[in-house]
Amino acid sequence: MSDPAQTREEAVREALRAVIDPEIGMNIIELGLVRDIDIQEENAHITMIMTTPFCPYAPQLLEQTRRTAQEFLNLPTTIEMGMGMWDPSMMEDGAADDWGLF
Image (tube, rainbow, N blue to C red; front, side):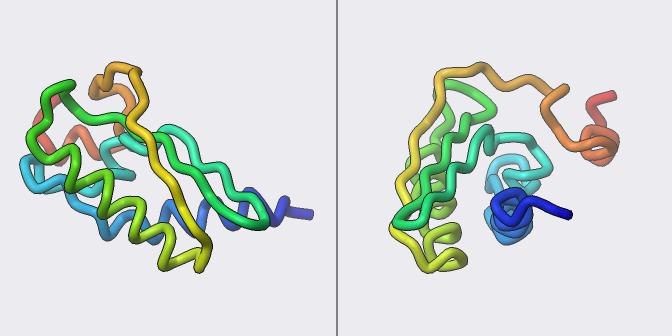
């Protein structure tokens, strides 16, 4: 039997594919920027990172991600920018090929 929380998190991840990094032209799930999604009964919280610490689109991406998840879940959603460093190995399998990295 599947875990309903896991299924819900997977559904949110699918919804977040609509959030595109304007500089790279790929969605935040392909890039591996969403590091954690915590869905509770009353609210949700997302932790994500940027491809670079000085990403000029960070505020826009964070807010678009928060809003997309909140609208999908119909729950108040908060977001934080994690301190982890991104690297191309965090991308979904095959996504780096499209980007020409490997």
